[in-house]
Image (cartoon, rainbow, N blue to C red; front, side, top):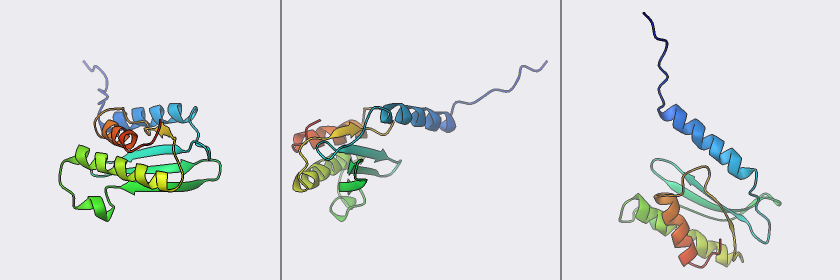
Length: 127
């Protein structure tokens, strides 16, 4: 007796759920010149943060674990995310940005995403 096909909830399910969260959040978030959007993109190995003015379509500041100042750094991925958060806040303030809208990119606010956000707040960005 056949019971049907079992659908595995693996990586494809997680990717689809993240995409749905990202679309849902982006309906309500938009960066402006006064308050640009701080976008966090996370992969298994790296993390990227960009400060984007959506109206002009320009990236005002960015930082990544691929930057030479962070790339060979010590610590785990959360420690590197903290360094990225501090660096993007420093670069954003140099570009004249004081306050941002935080876009977690559909990722859950925990772990590396939270570490980056906390470090950016400690470095002086308001969100």
